[in-house]
Image (cartoon, rainbow over all chains, first blue to last red; front, side, top):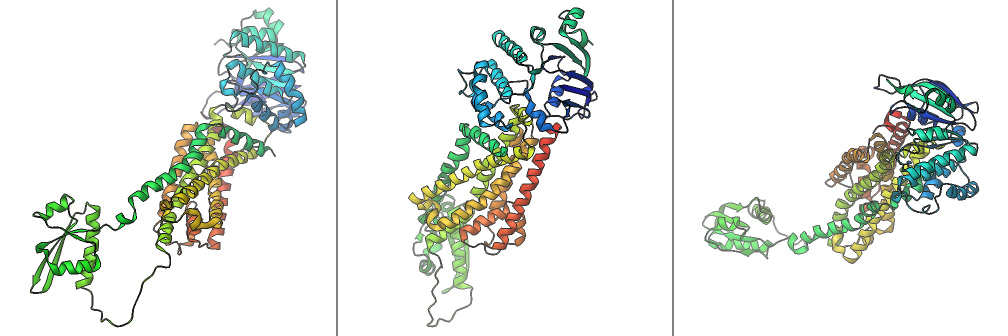
Length: 236
Length: 373
């Protein structure tokens, strides 16, 4: 479904490449855990896949469509949760945030009405859907942000550190959501530092270290080789 | 159109910020009338022409007669130490003189240059004595000459007040409200980390920029509307703040609407500049600092016109942003529009706005700028 081919990316003023020769594929319905230390290049890769950044060299394709040929097609098929507080607008309500994103991505009124109800139920947002985001806890913001990413009914979901900063209950909730989305046939790429989340939710583990892929194995193969030690490929 | 989605969201966001409502809408409506009220308290009819307090050496009756012929309300004061009386503020001016028989040879006027009333007295009496003793004799005939102003005193005062204050106030509030809103919508988007999500949506950069410019222009327009409404209402109940006639009575609906149209052009230009500056800035704080020189410049340029002749302005001014708009506002007050000046000013503003819009669009594409923090 998604193929990355020899992607390179550098930033002005930095000696080392942010990404170097990144090549891998993501099959339809697969869940890939992107693992690496801070500054490894995970967020840079996510930004490239979200079409916010352009690679210096290389390309990625979605359903055999190159990102440069039809970026809007890829944007419409992709939903992204960026790291942080879900990048929501504090003065808008949860629903207003979701609706704004839906409208910007061309979701029609009828489609929106059909999707919003089930999303509110799935993400347990009913109690605060009309409250302003400024009053939300981190967990509530993450669930709202995931709902926002799903409102366009994307085939491909990118989640950048979805459970970072969450308490145990909210973290478990995110894991359940990822597994449910997998069952629904969504293709997922998520970055995480949470071992339990990685081994519970992912089908494959891709380790990125200093901008390069050091390992790309199925979870079973990784577990067989290294147990649950995620530092094997990111040690100096 | 997607830019309308951006516009709607930004306006909803801004309106829900109490600080925006207070600073952009309430304050202009209240501050400007208050400011005018305070300034007019100091310039009431009586204080504008205060009666001078004069000490004349030896209480010379001839000089008293000359003075009273022109300034009948003059108070004559006697004092044992006249210089000290002036220093203490008990008198405004001391007139000393030399005389040969009945003829005056010279006058010496002692006044306090640090005192406003003393300075005014000095100017009055210098001119009086100069015209009484030094200017050519005029042979008196039977032709009566009467001087009358074409405007009534109230009209004259209102015109002066509005032509001096309105351009400055409108430009400063237009610049500050539009640009502050623009910086919040651009630098704020980066600071709140919502820009990544926005850029990941299938919407063009141009639509994002235009939507935000329209939204910040709406804030600026609301601010100006509030300012003018406050002025119309307060001058209706207390016309003294605008010089004697209310704003609506003096300008009329047509000129007020024209003023609104003219200032809208400036607002859009300021919004575009604000968006570009905000996108460049790392944070809202940095953006607010960067827009400060523009706000100060708008104040300086618009107040620089105060001394200019409104009927005879260099056409080159029409190509200087802010200056051209300020002159047009003044023209609206004087009810004296020059169509060519208006057209060139609009064109100039459109050019500058376009430059800012293009700059903003280019900045939104630049990775090093978007992720500058």
